[in-house]
Image 1: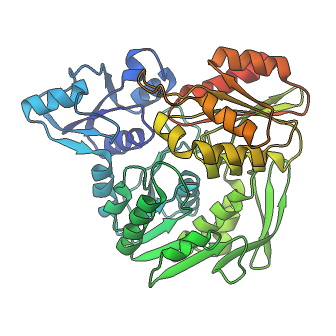
Image 2: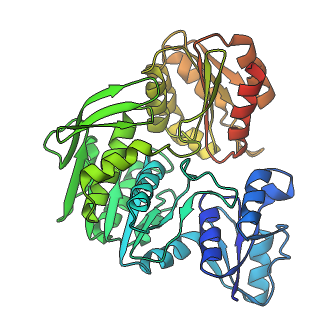
Image 3: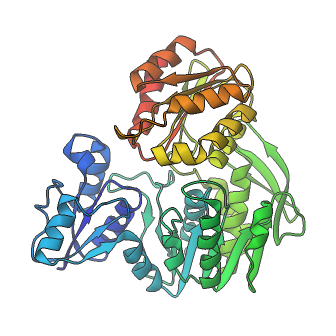
Length: 452
């Protein structure tokens, strides 16, 4: 049996690949610094149940019989595993290259890109194909709520048939590597890098795709062209896939597609757009559009994507991966559509993100929230001692300058929890937003317990 190893085993991009490779018959080893310091223990346990050998991140798992070490773009050269691999000549392979190898081994590859919605759409496509018996392989950054399991993290589906669906990351430019049968672009908005770079990445991705699916609801998408184009829209009836008569309920959405009405057990108008994108891709793969839409009536969503954690005392708690202006605004508007006051906590994930999108984030938060709604911002998650020029407090100041005075800085989770307990009231929707920090899901559950 061939042995391979992964550094950053807890990561959203690495963890599905580890599990896929176990399914392929490899002896898989993984390490993660968060495990070493006692964090993300639920993920560690899940990965061990999936058959992955978890080791300390000190280079000890790198032995001469390891075929290669797989890392994400976030893992640096001074990582102990990388240092150990370089020392004895073990190849170091990027996550995106392994993902490309897997995608390319299937007859019909589907790559889902976009700065918002790609995780949910990837999950929707994988779910539709799975329940309709098409035996897909799906590799995603988020765990599907439809697959509660005592073995592993449900962010993948494994089959060796003809179709593979992947979430393609634009943050490091690796989306340009893929040459899929179908490329999907959900959205292009300000996120990890400049808009100029983003358009360059997505333009190359479009050129590499045999078929392209894209939304008509964003004017800047007109810059992306393709000879084999399929479109979807919530606004333009000329799109190939168009939804109207959208009704936002407290815990679901109804919409009409080609004169037939369907229900999604999710909230947020943007999820109708996500559904159209998934249905369009499945249609290109030979699936009847009504069968696809019907399948989604049982789709329960993706963990940490505006995930309902629970309710108590007429207060509902949500956890959300939102971490750029468009995602934050979409989530807040989705929560507002059902009525009630919002208490939102957002934790920027990196200093770069806070600098790059902070001004726009402040503007959309002030625009989306009503005067009675409360915004709390914890300090930046990955902030270094040298990052003295930026703080979450700076974004709070901008939110206030944009006209929303009910905005407050929090130095810690304990402070946030005490603040929420003090200010909660019946009818509130509490949402915890942020990326990279896997403990935010547990924090959301702690809030639900504390306010019970």
